[in-house]
Image: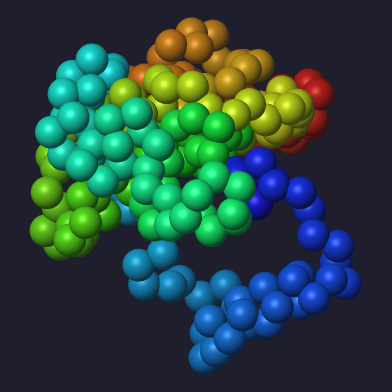
Length: 207
């Protein structure tokens, strides 16, 4: 909640934390620890050999997404501002959206989620949007303003383990911020793999 949704940490002994942990244990009933869970994760599409196009993505957003998420990306509230009622449709940018340190702020993660889940009624077996449309609309959404998470430069002290689509610096691979944001990501992934192979000890601060 602190990383993605700009929240405050719950005290470890609080009733709220106890309730969350209990619920997670309930959801895990019958699941072996570490076992793969069907449907977990956003899925994985083939990689594009071109950069995602946010201008084209705006057209896709207007045609496919704006009816629910709003033309301004603000989503749909269940109540009024300040009542803590939340949203029936989440905002995709703006003050109440996920911040720039969230996993959803990475183009590959966002595009895979969109492809496999959006618009409403989509399934992994029957996606509505094409791979290219999903990548481009993700690029448009991620180009919009959102809360900033402090100290992102401290993420991934072992730089070779940093995902290629993590748009924020610092970078070790020599590619630009634009390419880390929009792709194509395969050249970055290959470079990171080569750097990791050349330095298998992965000493933080030296990678």
